[in-house]
Amino acid sequence: MSLPAPSGAPGELPAPATSPGTPALVRYALGSAGMGVYVTVPGLLLLYFLTDTLGVSPWLAGLVLLVPKVVDVVLHPFVGFLSDADRVRRGSRLRLLAAGCALGPAFVALFAVPGPVADRPWAAALWVAGWFVVGNTLFAAYQVPYLATPTDMDVDYDGRTRVLSFRMVVLTLGILVGGAVAPLLVGDGEPTVAAYTLMALVLGAFTLAFQLVGVGGVRRLVPPRAPAGPAAGERRARPVRDTLADVRSVLRANPHFRVLAASYLLASTTTHLVLAGLPYYTRYELGRPGFTTVLMAAFVAPALIATPLWFRLSRRAGKQRCLLAAQSGFALGALGLAAGDRLGLAPVVAATLLLGVSFAGIQLFPFSMVPDAIREAGPGELARTGSYLGVWTATEAIGSAAGPYVYAGALALGGFVASRAGDQVTQSAQAHSAILTGFTVVPAALMVVSLLLQLRYRLDARARSGRTAG
Image (cartoon, rainbow, N blue to C red; front, side, top):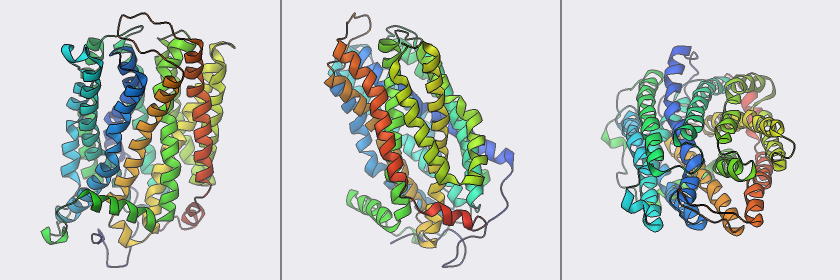
């Protein structure tokens, strides 16, 4: 049973409204800055923190990152249901959004491993896994209602891309802050737990501040309306089986969304694999641990320019064609890193810049196509926007864990030896080969498969032909 349509008469979609002004979009988009930090820093440093500071073996470190994300298969759709219920019963999704602002303190606890715990790799792994679950839960509470905003708004095909292009630019700034500042605060060489804790304190405060701004932005773009009353939320209990049934229902009911989710799962896995592998690549392949910040900036910064260009290009070519081009560019960029520094550092930076331009498109277009797919399905599915976004963000969360897990598996197969801060370890030739192959060939192959799945998406041409329809 779905919740009632959020507005309009039964069987009708809301009529498109005037596109919101730039100040309102900027305020909304600023909420993505903190999200960018949480998306980036654990993906970039958590695996490395576990294996090279806490001495956790690669196979166990991979599980620490993967198992908490398995919870997201149920958690995110459940949060989506709660978000839909709040929208009907309370008139807004702001309650969950505000609860998610506790993410900053949880982020600090993730890296602030107490000394007695840090001395025992198994205990340290459990500490990180536990706080990772807490952080992911709070992230879901913020992300799901936040990303429902473009669908709740009455804007058209290009308008949804415009809203999300603002979000993508600010998300890029958050990723850049997290990806560039975090390695600088942690330091080169063999950083200690204290260094990671300092980094988490600084970026945790940054995350909290911008999340609070984002709450106000959502309130401005989608003002609270008169609640429909408690009778609208008929199902108060949500056992696991009901939540999983909703996941199956959403995927079964909407083939366009199903294709998007399958393709994005692999794309998210690929991009997070690259993030997880970057510190290993710079330290063991390039022999320059401090170069992590440079390559991270080269990976993220192009989106500041590329995102507006992608948006303009999509108005002519369509989102689907642009997304396929971005996926192709990412695969080529990953392969371009396989030469390491044998040809000098310039080709490495150039390949990373190509990855960054492509990454901007891979982040922008799928997120702007999800509202298209939901609205195409009609008012009955539009009423389940939160459930759709719950499934979507669960897909992204699983990919963010699967990428590091795949890379950790490559390290384990290559015989990579974990170490604690201060230990001197020499990696074998096989381990070096695994570090390089896992960072280049594997993500290129995964992105090609994602592209092949994306080719099955058929909605974009029809959505473009009806640009003025909600």
